[in-house]
Length: 110
Image 1 (cartoon, helix red, strand yellow):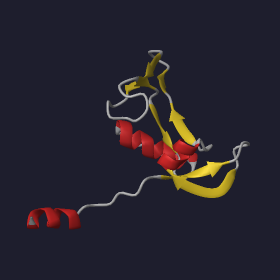
Image 2: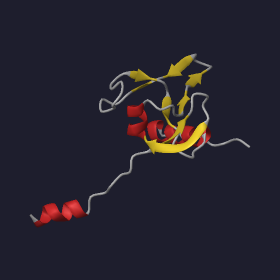
Image 3: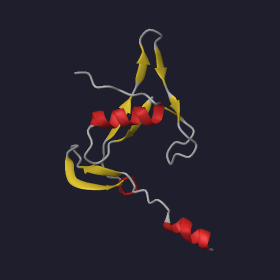
Image 4: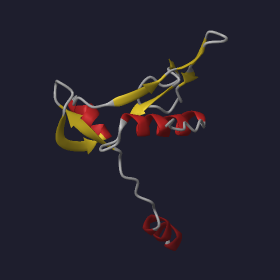
């Protein structure tokens, strides 16, 4: 019984990703909500898609979605994609998704 109590007290609480809610014209409303609520409520929100294409081989890199995904599990998808977290820019989100999904570190050119 003590092991269960110790495990419960050391459990890590992971906060759900928050997304900026947009109006119909794509402007931020000043409201952010957890991802699940945004999807449940049908709120407009931002996402980033990164397509990786090789000009030399004329190939497009696709990835297969994990079987545990809540939408389109096990299906083929674009190279990398994800939500833009509340307060983040498109570039920061694209860099994060490429690193998380494909292990690619995208450096910003100056």
